[in-house]
Length: 141
View 1 (spheres, rainbow, N blue to C red):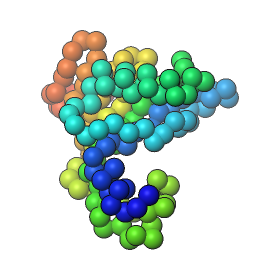
View 2 (view 1 turned 120 degrees about the vertical axis):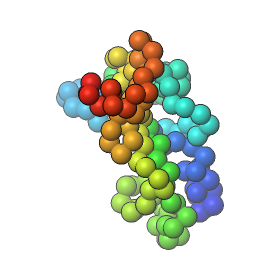
View 3 (view 1 turned 135 degrees about the horizontal axis):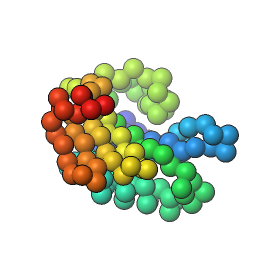
């Protein structure tokens, strides 16, 4: 993939991984990267849709997905040397964040999404509704 196409993909889409239990009772990233447009909030409905799409593509993981982790951080991909693009998804390339580090975690068994900013919970949606009180979330985790 050429540099411009890759920059646009990472700029326009969130990158996500799904974690599943293996037959050896080990949690591993078994599916990914998943991509979802950067066009609004990550909420339970969106995560359910991502999970449904994933299971349709990989029926063997149905019932085994434990968590989907979505990287919501803005990254400075334009600063990466062109000869490093082939290794971008390896995790070996040092990419600098633009703004705070953000991550959404969808817990499949509890049907709950928590968004973390710089490692602290700032937003949660579960069957009880939405909580965006970061102090209350930090106290409850």
